[in-house]
Length: 418
Image (cartoon, rainbow, N blue to C red; front, side):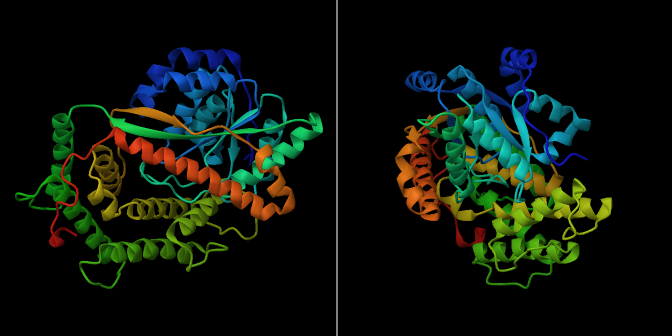
């Protein structure tokens, strides 16, 4: 099995995607529209001749199609990184399709030299444009939160600049930070009705009596019941019932540590945070699935590999359940994020609900402006740029919050709900 899939481009296929994009977007992602401000469209067109790193938040799997649309509005084409395993979906059909519109593979968490080489080559060439998601994998599942930015994005930018200077001594690379905010489609009444119907099915499955609880309290109760089930399954000792965050933290670490011990994951540190642990596990499982020749990789049967992947996804669903996130701002979008986690946990799958994607853009950055700091101290220069870009993205997030308002009164709960 090939470990690296290079980028390609097929103009007829790209034209087909351009023509059918609204239909594909709706069918695959259930996104009704991608919304850009007129002044932002003008800004995008001014960048079509530049070398560019396009940065976006990455809470879900929907951001690559949104980025594709942004490229179209710019009048350009982007290259994308995609997890290597995606190229094998649908007996390789998915891989051939996305490769023909500019995607190339990367093995998250691994030292993927071929992917790095391809990224630098894209940024070095005139008008080269590369989409990067600095939060990395796995996706956060929370549209109103940002995970820490990984410094490799900034480092890749400076390496690309070095390569571009070999072609053009005056070369620069622009960086465009963006933020995608998803807003549910429908009236408050229709959204509440769908949430009620979906939650009722789960409550009946677990014999939960909702009583007269409001929607927020019902969601928290279901979350508590699922947590209690997880604690029993993984034999996590009982803790104070009112310390939900602590309990869920122990549960997620119990799942992840259990995978690592049973599989034998190299370079796994039980003292790491849950996201880092999950990244190491997912990277290891992907490399095993790709049959890479590395003596540090565990030898797993198909059954063992499937078990580990299911457990990792269960850990992911537990990781993103944080009561404070929902209680502080119980919007339709946050309710549906929780519902998706519930459905994945209970049924093993979920489907995206109808929404619109609003794209916000920060000021265009020039790597030239950060070059002196990088030349003086590469590590600190990378850290400075990384922090700067995350700060811009955080500001965009806060601006985007105003697009959706709470469905119920924030904080309207009782201590017994969590």
